[in-house]
Image (tube, rainbow, N blue to C red; front, side, top):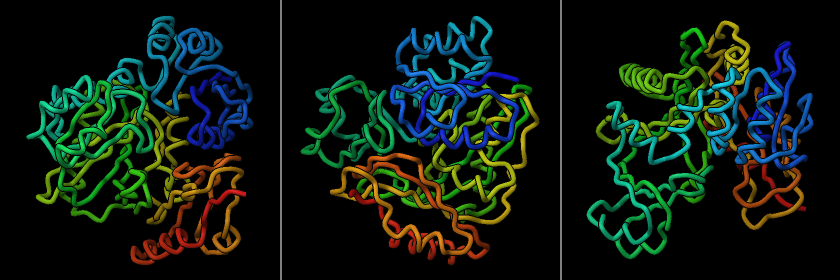
Length: 374
């Protein structure tokens, strides 16, 4: 039986472990918090810092295969483990590119992958040199997640809100639609693409609000998105699971926004809506099994369950009974005892063949189910 390690113990690790029960695998998780969402579902939990070289290296020596559920891991330790024969998905070289937003944008540019125009800055003062570039989005080179580390700068008097760290300044795109596509690549080089999904974001939190699968876009745009995802994945030269987030601008141009080298929020719906979920697919890659079917069983919508404003403390799920009583609605709670404003606490997947009904039900669920504090 293979020993598989997961660096990070959040909700992505939790859902990966829920799928692991179907496979002959012994699971190990490393995370600082012994009460993290994934801690109680693995065979072995190791308390440690995923950013610390020694912790990551020593953890990696316990397993045969290693993966991540968050990018902010110690890449140097992964590189040493890889050189000693541990299988790592994604490869450390791909992770090194993706975990830094500056390197990621330069990688797109070098490989002729369409993306928005950008400049790099080392500190807040350097923003003054790029006033003509506004309106723009400033993204921290490292350390940002779930909308944090992203700042929209419309005009010069907003530069004080900028980050005083190495970052990328991206020309603001006039967005028509935001799309994500997940691509799976096996060790043998086999490739599977999930249908693109359409994401609707919360403008205040920069977090995914809800999404629809499949995206409502012309077939030619789907082909373009698939071709870009394939080119990007081949350039990364790594097996694994990758989520590519893209913009379609008002003129119909497709631009890559960001890539995640792991299971992703935009793929949660695949648990119920697809024959092989993104979590099942990653286990197939990790354990060297054939890739699964990415075909949809039914169209779906997905709602993120996010901690309400001005609520911090022990989590209470108001309206959960009403939502659980709905047909073709699936509730996933992440096992986080404490809520705070904007914290991801769970998600709800809704299945159905009628797109309008999926959108209506998504809004209905958003109104009914609230995460408040005790």
